[in-house]
Picture (cartoon, rainbow, N blue to C red):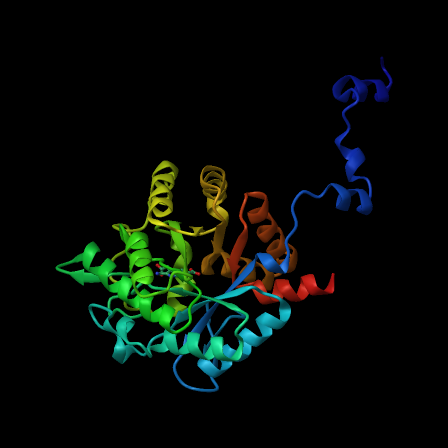
Length: 337
Ligand code: PBG
């Protein structure tokens, strides 16, 4: 009983977890989750003009692109096997107003982008957001009236914007605004306009998060936004409330659900997947991306390994896919394996 082996045997008995971990082949054999290119959705930023590829300071490696360059990016993504893009416009400041009226222009930047991508690269999915923040002079996701983001009027407007986005060729409408009742309103509007096959990916649980900072630089709302979005996004403290919100989106006709931000909310990913059985996507948001980039640039972490580990964590938490600014980098790495 004094021998070391005996001591270990008393503790572990016949259970030795390390047997399956002993070699590369056995680790591959027992690996439960895998990241593939089919799991990736690539969010891109679009600006007016032509031949523009403009770096975003707070998101090293991510650019704002004019429509022609976005089309090239879409081709690249399709060639790499990335299933879909999510597009976000940086609208000319002169077009932004209190109500976000440019969201109702059939040929606005987001719709122009969709048309151009769908024409040149018909086989890539295009996911568009109907939130008003790229179009409002105050950077909020809805119409601002007497200091309040008015719900029902905003919903009526984004339902109209959704029809225009579908007319332009959007495959999936993804409302990120968190107004009450918007998923049902968008579904009814799309159906009435003959867009039965256009889906809805609900930003089912979108939290009032500080991780969106770099995105606001990307679409030019950081200098505009007055106050915060706490009257419409979910309190980061609340998991049960997030589940209630997601349940409403399911009832209202969402085809897919999204959890946003991603990594700090893996518990929500898991609960949403377990509860509803719908496809669940996590949005690894700008701040999550930039943290990894910054630490890697300082040599404090291995950026590539951390990137892959975070994306795999989403799979383990039950996600069917991830919106990630790393999509192209990851697709390139996966294609070499
Ligand atoms: C707003 C919107 C946000 C993001 C996408 N659309 C959040 C915000 O600005 O409040 C964040 C995306 C990211 O951080 O990567 N409708």
